[in-house]
Image 1 (cartoon, rainbow over the protein chains, first blue to last red):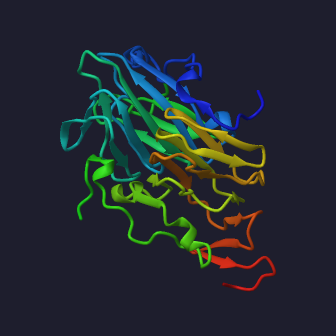
Image 2 (image 1 turned 45 degrees about the horizontal axis):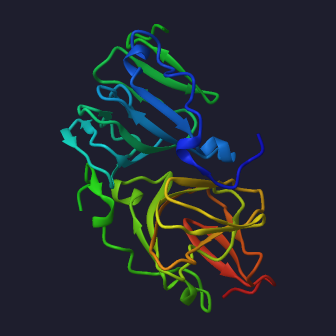
Image 3 (image 1 turned 90 degrees about the horizontal axis):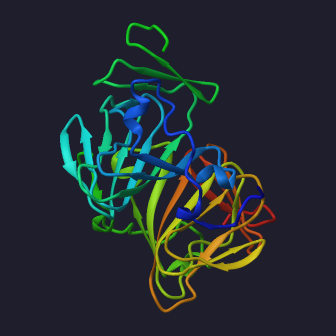
Length: 156
Length: 156
């Protein structure tokens, strides 16, 4: 596909693969739909997705990145932001940033009856690791892809 | 200020300095207001701003980055996207990405009577240059700041 000049984000077909997590975690992401935006324009230094959470859905397992910053901007709905500080209900027009290396793990939950829509941005610094304090999971970025391990080092 | 968990983007005070351009270019940015969001959360790998264009305002001089990718998402209003391909009127929910190194220069213009509001994202790859095909200006990133030159190499 030629690089578009501009497009309507919701017109982009959702990513087919729901999650790159190993089971039993991938199935927990069934309520999440990602439209990959940045890559469509050839961007490679950071990624931008338009993500939808159905009622009961979540953005991810609660995680903290070692090297890659993240940012979210809420477009619709009222997701719950869950961090080490606890839980906070967000609203359209709110945003949050998750600095790499702090160890503070985050996720969004849709605990409402309405759909949640948000933009998520993350950079692609090499050698990143994601830590999951609530789950037996560690992720390591290798060559642009992710490898998943148990906390004892065994691969999934 | 302690790092917030989340905040309402429009509650962030606008950046005081309207533009880092030298004159006569800085005055052309009077209609533009930037709220710096990413830095508030300590993010350093990329920047995110919430930017407002008053009627007649523009996002920047038309420019192309050598190393830093850019992405915009329109939240309100109908800005005109001006690139080498020409001019295209955008609408809320539309987005565009500007891949570094293509040489295709871009800017947004507000040619309407209503305010334009958009998110802009750009990474911070070192050693970036910005080229301005329509103006006697070259920008070079040095140590996280920008230095401005005439096209003949003379500094502003």
